Length: 454
Image (cartoon, rainbow, N blue to C red; front, top):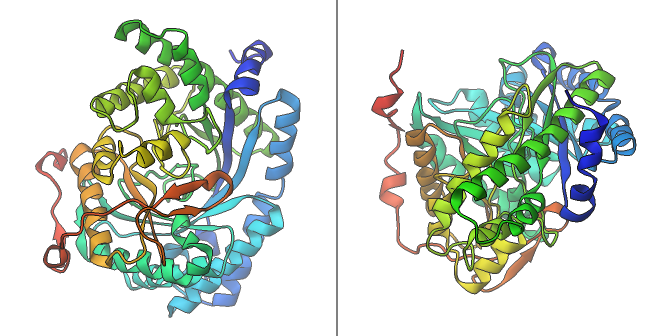
């Protein structure tokens, strides 16, 4: 049973170790907003979001004051817009106008981000899917709070390499469209393999078609709490290490369960899941890389990093699933470069490379996240990086993702400032050799043999 004692027990974690509820996200179905007339569709979208989410911000603020738990972000995710706008959108510009409607609705209800400017194309693209994808650069350059995601592959379907090729071009085009802001649009764009329907974290959140009309999903985060707990067992064996991580993850997830249940009751919207991811911020001490160092590495990226991250991810999940009725989303350890000061330090020291980050994604929660690369990187190279990451997800039956930022006008050795939770990042070098012939083949990479389980 969750009680006030458990909340009071976490006060020190909140005050000293950067424990927070990273987001309360309302997922909203827009399937009933589909209309053959674009103006009518946009009006229905605006009206539904501003009605269902009208009390989200005030509810989050109330929970913060009532329980003393920081609720950093209040967000909304919606049904993938490629599905919603297919009947009325005939051009990329039509879809981009829906993005503006989403942005207006987000500003009206006062949330931090809105996700779901998305398409699901793991096996093929409809006309609407392709139009939405081609509209992404315009949409992200003319909105402020809209986030976009595209699912390009899955264990069941394989990888849509036509879409992978297109997304390399779209990432590069989005960078160009937002080059005056250091290509910030790419920070709001992520591609997936095995994208979950109930992820509360941006930029990948969308409201899956299997979900209820509206749902409350909560994301908790406490890298600093885990690091502090491990400091107290420094030098102990792996059994003690694992038990400490599990116990800490349990306490952190209980906070998320409490907030999710309270938000569900106050908003009269069903509770969906708690995502128990360790999501870092640029704040000192709020770093997944620092946890890896506390486990025994000089820097993230040193030999042993992948094993340490695998251990961390597994123990976080084992502790978290005991603390919540429903665990979902991405759940595990995030390794974004720009949002984690320890990761930034490792890159600057030369300990952490793009290739090592890719290896780490085999065992972490998501994938290559918030990585800045030279602005002159070819679109086909970006597609190749995406394909590599999707293959890891497909073969290992896990979610993987790529959020990569080719910063126009900047090269290796420079850094880029994104601000806020997005932090700053050093520009990382990319393998210079060509994969053009591979990317340009077209078609699909088939699903792996172990996908046939019917």
